[in-house]
Picture 1 (cartoon, rainbow, N blue to C red):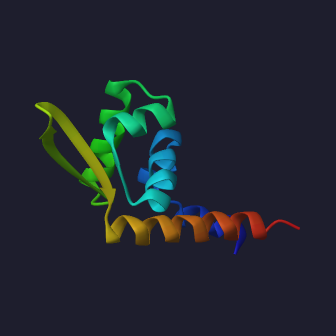
Picture 2 (spheres, rainbow, N blue to C red):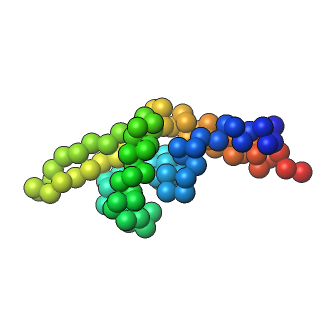
Length: 100
């Protein structure tokens, strides 16, 4: 274990904002865009860019609809995203646990 586990770190998840999104969704399963923006203290543009990257990787699903004639964007973690996040946490744990 140890430094060899660096190769197991998923670059898509490892960015600060994307990691925050995955941490939040792993607990909440889904959230609306405004909720994520508030919790992560992100700008609309920054959050959009990171969500797109996670969506392209298949880690989150984005559903757009309307509520009370206002656009509503809901983001949910996918089974692939949950699996990738678990693998990411295992790799980080191995890196940290490898120190003596």
